[in-house]
Amino acid sequence: MSQTRAYLILAAREVESYFLAPLMFLVFTVFLVLNGFAFYLSLGDAAGNVDLAVRNFLGGSLLFWINILLVPPLLTMRLVAEEKRTGTIEGLMTAPVQDVVVVLAKFTGALCFWIALWAPSIVYLLILRGFGSLPDPGILATSYLGVLLLGALLLACGLLASAVSPNQIVSAVLAVVFDLLLFFFPLLSMQMPQGALRRGLEHVSVLFHFQSSFGKGVLDTGVIAVYLVGTALPLFFAVRALESRRWS
Image (tube, rainbow, N blue to C red; front, top):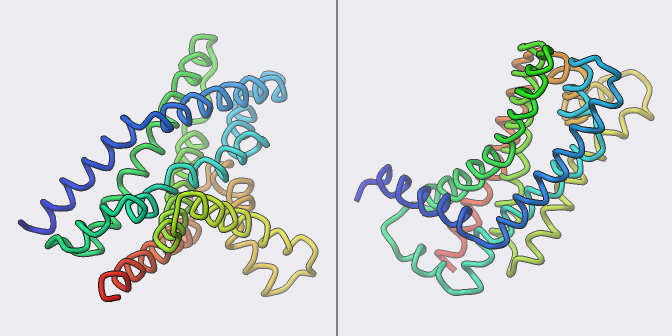
């Protein structure tokens, strides 16, 4: 069996497992409730300014960041850690499938579910259109791109946490720590004088990106590169973690 076919089979299995797991139904429901409430609050705070409402909803509200920082660890905590607990990881390790294929398949499943979580928010835009208002397409497109890229980054970090953790609880806690460090550490730049270090921290600040780039309809290739590299690195280390288990 080719590695491409193996990837497609494993990815399909991962996607299916997300939509059949009872915990994921609970996550989906809570996420939709929080997202709907965040949209309602964003409309109220924007006082009729549709573009501002979108910026508040996609990057400018506390509920947005709660969902962003806490949901990915819930989606990834079982990916490898649960297979270790149940012993099914041994089957993957002995199958003629490369470790990179296993990691990418699991990442694909998590990313597909992440997209599914945000897809219903399109209904909110239809509601706005029904009232004769439609957000700026540029702001809308870059904001959703930011959600996708940031989600991919945090899911990759969560997958790495699951790969190095003995169980789901440790995996979830470790992933949350990763996410909080990624969010709060660059905020130290706000206390620094202007200089190379401050610019460097701002360049990796997810909050800064949403405020100055994605949320304003600005497509910065440098920012996109940061997210792509930031996603690739945890996936690379997750592959190495599986490789070390294979040879241990």
